[in-house]
Image (cartoon, rainbow, N blue to C red):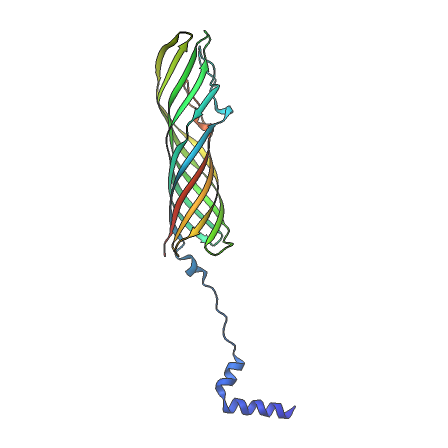
Length: 242
C-alpha cells in the first residue's frame, strides 16, 4: 500500500497539471433556456379559409306570415388574424389575437302562411378578440406540433339583407331587412404544426374550430349570430424577438 501512495505523490509533484486534471473533472455544460427562448415575445399573423355552418338551435322563430328558417347556409369565406404572444417555456405560450372573418353571402328559405315562399339573402362578417393558450410539443428538431384553445368576444354584423317573396306565378315582392350588429361570446379549439425556417421565424400550418355563441338579434332575423360554427384551415408565420 505504501508504494502506490508514494508513486502518486511523486507524480503530483512532478506534473501538477496532470494531477489537477485528475482531481477536477470538467464542469458540465448547462443549456441556457433563457437564451434558447430569446425574449419570449413573438408576433404572429395568418390567413385561411372558413367553412361556416348554422346550428339548428340558432334559427329564429319566424314572424307573422312567415315560418322559422328551415334552410339556411353561409358560403365559405376568408379569415385573417394577427396576434402578440409570449413563449413562457418550450411547452407553453399565450397570446392576444385580433381576428376578422370577411363578408360571406347568406341564403335562407321560409314558408309563408298563404302558400308563398320567402328567400332571405345578405352578408355576414365578424371581428373578434381572443385570449389564446397553446401547448407546444417540441418532439422533433425544427418541427413542433401544438394544441390550443381560446376565448373572447366577437362583433358580428349582418348587412345588405333583403327578402324575396315568391308564389306560383313568380316574384311577388322584395323587401329590405335592416342591418344589425351584435357582440357575442366566442371560443375556439386549435391544432397544427410549426416548422422552423430560422432561429426566429416559423411557418405555421393549422386547423381551427370556432363558434360564435350566446346571443340573438331582436328582429325578424335571418339567423341568430350566436350559433355560427366554422371549420378553418390556416397558414401563417410567427416571428420570435431576440
